[in-house]
Image (cartoon, rainbow, N blue to C red):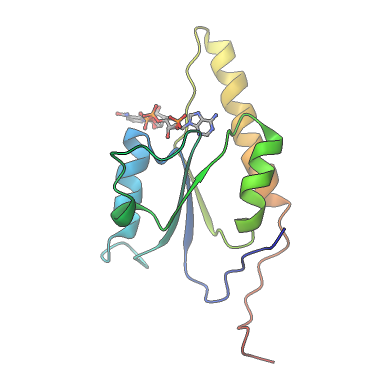
Length: 131
Ligand SMILES: NC(=O)c1ccc[n+]([C@@H]2O[C@H](COP(=O)([O-])OP(=O)(O)OC[C@H]3O[C@@H](n4cnc5c(N)ncnc54)[C@H](OP(=O)(O)O)[C@@H]3O)[C@@H](O)[C@H]2O)c1
């Protein structure tokens, strides 16, 4: 699987849950030229494919779909960008009937995403043009 590296040190966000109420506002804020170190490069993700109402051009550079509850799917979709991402914004949520079930599923989702990102090769900060 080809890795994308972050050679120019720019902040690169992964927003997990970008189609949610919080996720979309966050994406728009990071894409703003007035954002600290902005505009950021933003990968936005959700479980389902991009909704028709989603303002793609202003909110994200790339939209990714994966089910964070599924480690295999998460690995397949996140591995290629895991060396590039500098900041993760966790705004995904699953709601179940019982609080115990909420904890279980949301913890598993977060674990899956972090384990894929942590298994990425260390970030390489050398310019590709530098020897
Ligand atoms: N909304 C508020 O007013 C508010 C206020 C304060 C704090 N918060 C907190 O902010 C967080 C987000 O809330 P929200 O209201 O924005 O939630 P939301 O509208 O329900 O959005 C949840 C997001 O998570 C994604 N998601 C859910 N399950 C997923 C999975 N298995 N894999 C990948 N993505 C998944 C959803 O994508 P799909 O739809 O494709 O599954 C969606 O993008 C929560 O922790 C909430 O407690 C919310």
